[in-house]
Amino acid sequence: MQKVIPVEAQTPRGVGSTLSAYLNLMKPHVTVLLLGVTLASMVVALNGLPPLGVTLATLLGGALAAGSANAINCYWDRDIDELMSRTKLRTLPAGKAPPTHALIFGSVIGALSVAIFGLFVNLASAALALSAILFYVLVYTMWLKRTTTQNIVIGGAAGAVPALIGWAAVAPLHWNATLWTPLLMFAVIFLWTPPHFWALSIVLKKDYARAGVPMLPVIKGERETYRQIIIYTVILVASSLALVVTGGMGWLYLVCALALGGGLLVFAIWLWQKRTLKAARTMFWFSNYYLALLFAVMALDHVLLR
Image (cartoon, rainbow, N blue to C red):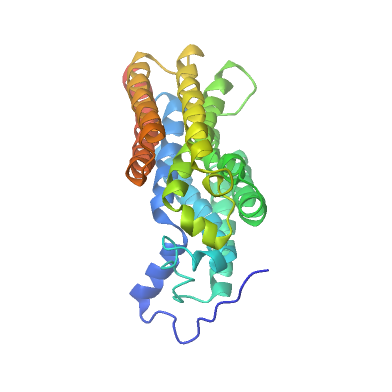
């Protein structure tokens, strides 16, 4: 049962602080990475830069969709957020906005996102955006996160949908040879999510234990987490290279994917050997750069070589 956190007399004063509080609900640092993935997928689908109008509408819709899912996540998880050092200063635990306002805010911008996609992009992208919001909220946030160590594994599908949204915004998702490219781009993000967040969960193991969240290092121990990080990293790198095998990417991408994937695997093995918080933090931060750079190279490969 959700714990009700009194916030009366703690709501922020002034327009600036109010805007900041609601922007914080959208978790902009996460949203920026998802928008980069979306744009890269659009470029790959067209073998070039997409039209400005469609690009702006897609990125705005994507930002609102991600913000919607994150805001509702903040509403649902406000009881555990106040127990964790990383999240206790978020808008709701810090009493900067009423919880019901956060829920309304998330629902409204989610509906606005779907409307923007439907009116200014296409129905396929609108359906994908809605599915991502619902999956993240209903499947991951309300069910998986508090019940299984596979929460991040299965829940990662929501974060991978922007790769399909970007493609669907400018090209059809028909079942033919070209479909392998967006599906593999989806797979790369899906497989990237577990090692990325498991590295963070090692750093925040005590926080997750205190909040009762069954993250892998809390339930199975750090040794098993190190092993799973290596396994998923190997599969991730293999999937990223499959884009070359299927013809979705060229030699520029191949060279960069090998370098980035090799670096990620080195950090995963280093984490297993050192078993320190410093190594876990390094793995977490490098994995952020890995995904951002890998998708940037995908776009460059199609702009420069196709």
